[in-house]
Image (tube, rainbow, N blue to C red; front, side, top):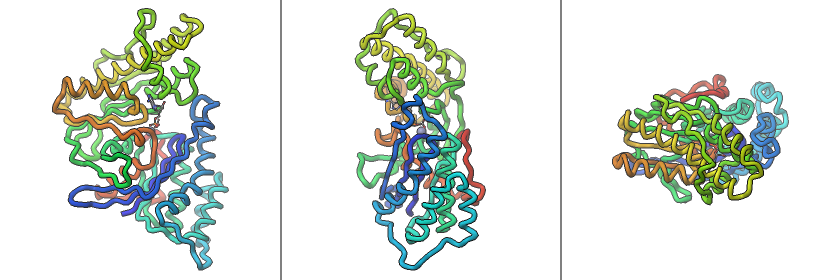
Length: 393
Ligand code: KG4
Ligand code: ZN
């Protein structure tokens, strides 16, 4: 089964084509093509993602990236006959893409020159994320549906982050999706630029959110602290790099927000304010001081994550801990989580995404789409597929 995967929920335009095969009781996912176009450089000057700019870039990039994928996957063949998209369908696409008329024109060109590719499903992120950005991917998927009658499978971005950890790969072309690696109940700690949540997973595709951030997401806190330290967006990886050579200092102390609250919720906006006060008190920051602040910040937020995760593993008798989302690329958080499990819960398995799948990508969207397809749940009629910017698991 071949699945076209589309992700446009934030600042990456990501498209891939995956081929799934069930081989000897295992699911294999072959990556036929994979392209990610990052908009980070464009958003840098705003210090964060600027939604209308993200939308415009997605609309500009999607058609060429799609064609790039078809070519890489060897699914690109040109039509000899002079095909035109039927007028009634063309009208729907025109209306749908009223405000992305250039993308609509590109789609009509595709319809005229490219033969329907051998693709069985289109998996597209429909939420959570930036609504205008999500719509671009969704409308592109719908236009392809109208053109070629390929079913559109809506995918939850966070489910993608969870399932991305099942891939057993070393960057090989064929990846195995390791279902045996998960025993239930499982717990997902989702840490990204938009989310910080703990999700209890009683069985495949059965999610129950047990806690979440009350304000900023952890990635957002990393990015804001980076800004206070004079580092460019997205600052998470930079803060983490600085933290590595930071040292503990009695005059650099930050709170561990909500660490003792009797629930699984988080709060990260206060700590960013504490960093602001700290920088104001310390005056001109030399390089070593920046490193020391980064270290204390990373330690503070990690302690909170570890404490809440530990409590949840205890309370729910968790057999598998899954850590997903962009911030799961953080090596300190990774090693502390590994330590938590090794020292306290030796029977609990722990899963992280491969480094190249930890931040946003479309491969995880394809895997989540495949799970939806295989679950036997009905695929909703394409007219009902819409952006759901706050879609919660
Ligand atoms: O999952 P993701 O790519 O996008 C969202 O869905 O939000 O996560 C992006 C976030 C950004 O805030 C970025 O600064 C953070 O992940 N991030 C990191 C690291 N790598 C990415 N934060 C801390 N340490 C890292 N190594
Ligand atoms: Zn994400």
